[in-house]
Image (cartoon, rainbow over all chains, first blue to last red; front, side, top):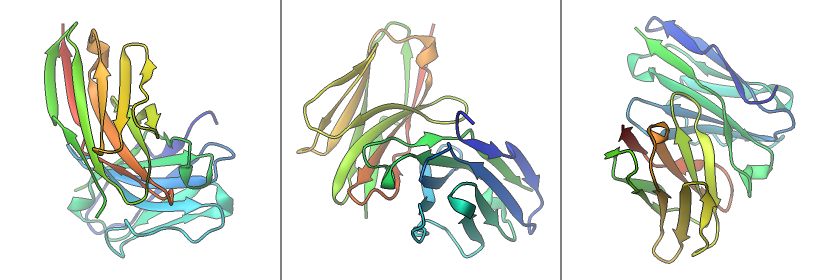
Length: 116
Length: 111
């Protein structure tokens, strides 16, 4: 597609349930990032994938959060046993170059997650 | 710990005013600073700055970086209601892992 695609655009779930958020990066982009944006806050880094290298998971807030990227393309962010504080917009971004050096990130429209 | 601080957090101006948004950063092995505009959903890229003192311009928007004082400014002249958005500043380190974002400046332009 022309841009980064995320699904679903909105997700409402009950506390304690697991959720999966999907990201389709721009074709050919080797770097993929997940960020979280809470109301009135900046973007909080979660995880970064670059090619076949081990992902940088340093931003994941707890072991309830995990992500994978299959075949170097589509990525799934999974949140287990969701809590109300997980409510936020989850943004995915991709970049054509290693680590985004010299190239900006292109963002998707995000998934708005609401945990009730 | 790396951080990016933006000021002011919010700003209300009238159409036609000129505004300056500030961004200071502390980023290990700094590589570049980026500005994004976020309206309803996806942040959209505005500028990437890597060298001090070189102004980048796009229409009524311009930005400059000072690597000695570790800050950048984003100027918007002759503001329009369509400029109302959250403006995000982000630092990128040499390793090129994650962009480190500030909390953003919410700009409201009234007609």
